[in-house]
Length: 275
Image (cartoon, rainbow, N blue to C red; front, top):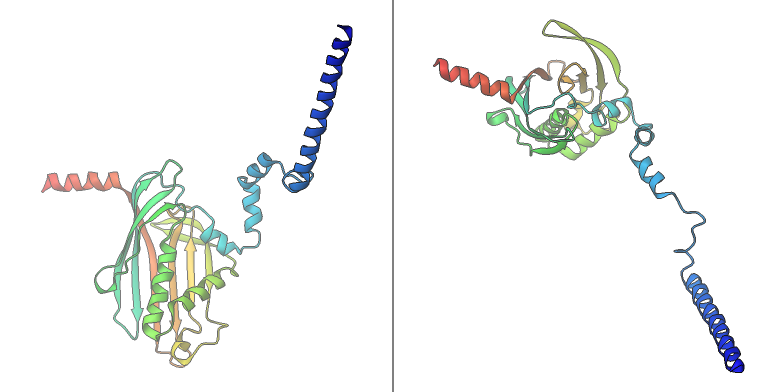
C-alpha cells in the first residue's frame, strides 16, 4: 500500500514536470515564430498616443510650417460664431475694358448647424449667364466663399485664354502657401473694425505664354475680420496689361450682411400680412 502511494506521487510529479516542459517548449517555439508580435520593448502607450492626436499642441505642430495666410484661410474656423441657420450676403462687381461690366449677388445659405457646430451649406453664386454652380458642402467650419471666388476666377481665366484652370488654381494655392498677412483697419456700416489682409500675385514669377501675359501682374487682395460673420469682408482682383495700359479688369466680392432664417421668415410673414 505504501509502495503504491509512493508510485502514485512519483507519477504525479513526473506528469507535472513533463507538462511544464511541454508548455515551456511550445511557448518558446511560439515566441521564436512570432518575434515581432511579442516584442514589447519599444511599444508605445496607446492612450498617450491617442490623446496626443487630439490635442491642440499636436495641431500646432502640424501648422508650424504654414504661412500665416494659409492658417487664416485653411485652418481658422470662420463660421464658429454662427449658431443657427442663416444666410450670408455678398455683392460681386466686375469692371472690364474687354467684357461687359456687371453687378451681382452671392449668397451662402447655412441650411443646418450640427451639434459639433459644423455647417451644411448651399450656394447661389450670381445669376443668368454669369451664374456659377457649386455643389453643397457638409461639415464646414471655414467660410468657403474665398475658394468659390478663386475657382470662378480660374475658370474665367481658362475661358479667356484657352489655358488650363488647374494651372491657375495651382499657382494661386502655392502663392498663398508662401504669403504672410498684415494687420489693417477697415470700416463697415460706420463701425471701425480690426482686420487682416492677404495680398499676393500668383503669376509674377511664372513664365507665361503670350496669351496669358496680361495676367503677369494680376493681384489678389483679401481682407478679413473676426468681427464680420464668416470673417471674409472683401476679395479683390486687379489686372492691368503691361503692354496695353488701357486694358484692365477689376473684380470685387464684398460682404453685405447676414440674416438668420428665422428673421427672413418673420420679414416674409410681415410683408404678406401688410399686402
